[in-house]
Amino acid sequence: MEKIKLENLTLTYVDAKSSYTAFENINLSINEGEFVCVIGPSGCGKSSLLSILEGLNRASSGSAYIDGKKIEGPGTDRGVVFQHYSLFPWLTATANVVFAMKQSKCKGTKKELMEKAQEYLSKVGLAEALDKYPSQLSGGMQQRVAMARVLASNASILLMDEPLGAIDPQNRRELQILISKLAKEENKTVIFVTHDLEEAILLGDRIVFMANKNIQADISVDIPKPRTRESLMGNQKYIDMHNNLMQLFYNNIADKVGKDEVVI
Image (cartoon, one colour):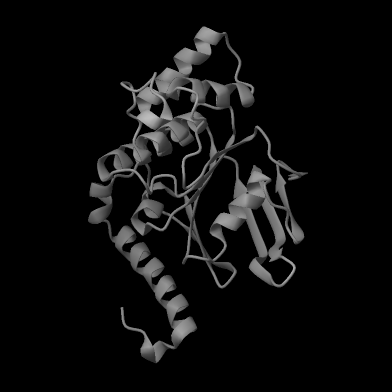
């Protein structure tokens, strides 16, 4: 079943002196329960595209739909994790998660909500930080609170903008496994922006490559899940896909500066 549909979507930022088109004529369909990774060079419009889906920006032209309804603004059907954590500094880690659960209309008593919040904080490796405030947590730990907050919510769609970039390699690997597992178990539809090609292949059912203000490729990841980094390393499908994605990046650079001058 189609969950998200983008039709001829264009976003142009305009101020008093100039205008800049972030992307144009984007067409994309995402089914319920799909995990779609979006990659591409910096400035290609990945985060701007998420801002439309979040309801924080309005398209200059074209339309974006969720469950057949046009996106008119933010909604509790979408959970968002930004590149930079955004926690309430006056609330503990547990209270931050409970607040988000209440906003997304999670049902339960105060005790039940707290227990669920603490369960998800434990899942992201923060069992020892339940009652700590953001100022008492490292940047990576704060981002894990943000992850727990969105995973514990009722949102059927998860929008993630490089959510693991500030997290150390060990915890990053554990969270990749957790996100993939929970998304499948709870039938979440996920759009996950990343610069990490290996991460995109590890997590994605599909990989959307953006460049030159549009979608240049939409690739199915035909490797059975669950996947691990170790199993991917010797997999010929992984090697071919990684090389294909690298070539897409190479072609984008070559188009900009001239193929004769490019050395990678």
